[in-house]
Amino acid sequence: MSNSQQPPPTLSPQALATLVDKIRAWSKALGFGAMTISDTDLAEDEAHLLNWLNAGHHGEMDYMARHGTRRSRPAELEPGTLRVISVRMDYLVNDQHQAEDCLNDPTLGYVSRYAMGRDYHKVLRQRLQKLATQIEKEVGPYSYRAFTDSAPVLEKALAQKSGLGWIGKHTNLINQQAGSWFFLGELYTDLPLPIDPPGQNHCGSCRACIDCCPTDAIIAPYKLDARRCISYLTIELHGAIPLAFRPLIGNRIYGCDDCQLFCPWNRFAQLTREQDFQVRHQLDSSTLIELFAWSEKQFLDNTTGSAIRRIGHERWLRNIAVALGNAPTQPAIISALTQRRYDSSAMVREHIEWALAQHPESTR
Image (cartoon, rainbow, N blue to C red; front, side):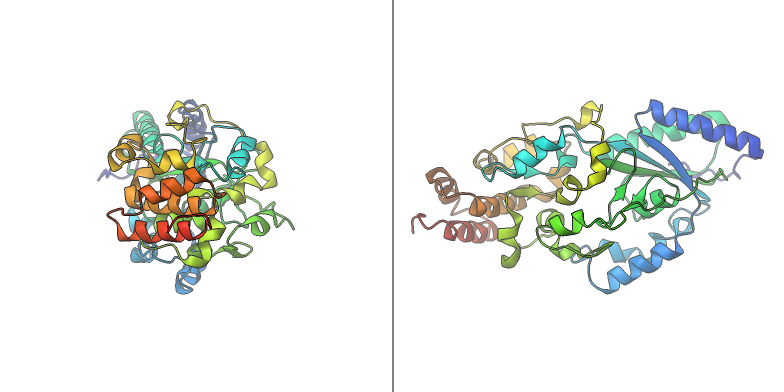
């Protein structure tokens, strides 16, 4: 972060255009798949956000409403902001067929592809800081602030506004050349850089994401009720998972990728070259029984530097208990559940009892 008290450097239109070309080259060298620039007018997106919040579709994510209009008005969050530099970084580590194979094997634990390796917040933040520093070396002191899903920022709206892609019917950002398996990051800056044209929507009449959603969380094109979303239920929700959704969760123990797995545009997705995003601890192929056996220490050790750690061991066990309830009845599954039947957490015990009730052969 740089909060320079000086006015931004005065650059001619030609110098600014040249600077943008350099920023694109630096971004590519830092591993970003693309870089685009927008202004800060998000009036239309702000109205969409407020309607979404007023409908209660954010569930327990109170932070979505807590910051008011700072989320949709960049200059309120970071005074002096004139432009937003948006970047994307691909994260898919395996072919999509591998993800589908895991999803189709109810004895395996399905972890959302974005959480396989190192926490992306740290990776992108460091790269964005390097980009900001490179710009400063070129033009002198200026104001900027880097974000990676780390503050009230409408990152998908900003990315769409600058042509990095378009917001699909599943509310994720899609890029024509890269699909949607990528992270986003932003640099708010006071530099009056030339802006890029907005992204054009190419969803057409396709309903693949809507029709494949296990819990019907996409209640209409471009409208997601987070309270029904498996990513919300397994990550954001702190309490018990509602009974009606448990059978629908299947073997998804951390997040859900269905709306991306079945999006036709992801046939253009590229595998990431980032070593930090490579799979750790066989999270792409571990059995539910193996993952359910993790002690709290094992969970903390195995999720060091991972986005998964934020849910904690209790919710990890809660999620896996539900998946074990959805798995085929096998003695080993019943045994795994029974061994944790007297867990110290009342919430975990309740989900284990539910899971055991799904298996007629479970002992009482």
